[in-house]
Amino acid sequence: MSGASVAMLSVRELLVTFGQGADRVTAVNRISFDVAEGEWYGLVGESGSGKSTVVRAVSGLLLDWDGTIVVAGQKQARRRSRSFHKLLQMVFQDPYGSLHPRHTVDRALSEPLAIHGIGNADRRIERILIDVGLDPSFRYRFPHQLSGGQRQRVAIARALITEPRILLLDEPTSALDVSVQAEILNLLRRLRGEHGLTAVLVSHNLAVVAHMCERLGVMQNGEMVEELTVQQLRAAAPQHPYTQRLLTASAGYDRRAVEAMA
Image (tube, rainbow, N blue to C red):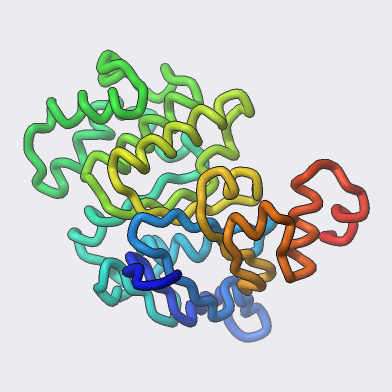
């Protein structure tokens, strides 16, 4: 975070472990980072690096962690308040699993409004569907009647309908067809401007992060091995060998890079 920017999210010495004794595994090993208001920050690394665990701890889905998490100036306990969940929302990787198969789109979008006591449900639901590129007629469809991209649009609409200030995006396009991924990323870029969102984007894809974010943290084996700007990434100027291998691998198939990451 640079200059006089205000941190919308601050994480200090975050530690997450699973298991006990000899079976104890450190999933996130005392990482720290800040995300300024209005900034999009990427967390990148291969599968198992700990990046999704970080956002689950920040979101309140994971209760067992140590360290300090401050959101919009408020230090967070392990159990979060209702106002926290209005302020911060999460979009998950799998649009097939994140929507209840027996609930209509209308119910998926109505429930957050009811939980937070937000009125004008009809108007808000129609407006948010249009915002995410869906006709209001989708309101009474079930998930099985939607494509993967349409389901993810509904999931984004559900996250945005309470008008949060922060989004956590956990691989939001990796479960989608390649032809649909760019549509969803461009939708998120547009919504960022329209809603003034701050976000943390988890991805294994450096190209996605370079398209969406200003800065990124690179995770390996639960540790943040490097933090750099997207300009540094595009200039192929990462310092850590692991980041260099990720960058080489993302540029196309490179047998030496793949073998080095094994």
